[in-house]
Length: 155
Image 1: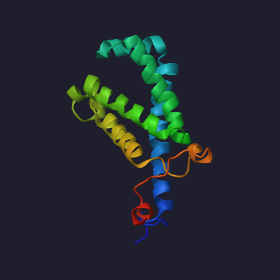
Image 2 (image 1 turned 60 degrees about the horizontal axis):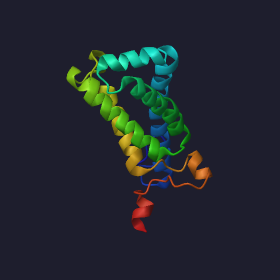
Image 3 (image 1 turned 60 degrees about the vertical axis):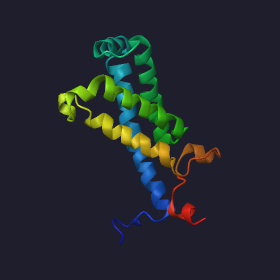
Image 4 (image 1 turned 180 degrees about the vertical axis):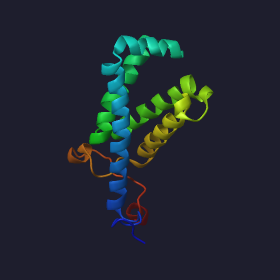
């Protein structure tokens, strides 16, 4: 069965396309949150916010999170060192879940964990599968293609 002219997920090209979409969408969300922390709020405001949320070492943590979200989001979009940045994003989201959001319930409108849960899932998928073929790392000859595709299982 085919939908929208794309295969049912049984081809490497489809897997690569799905991973590209996931990387770009999740990367954009991470990038925009890092951008907001650095440019809309500014570093000092972000550090104060982290302190108020109970983040450990808020002055340092705020800088690290801004870097991971801003630079790491761009890296996901481009497919640069995806495994490393996916792992960092996963740590970022698990930390946000535990420190800030879990006590507020599920829904994001009430400060809940809905968004961090979804982003942690996206980071986990990229960490476990790889980034696909459409990435800068592939142009540099670095690994990134999803290892658990139908073609690789037959080999």
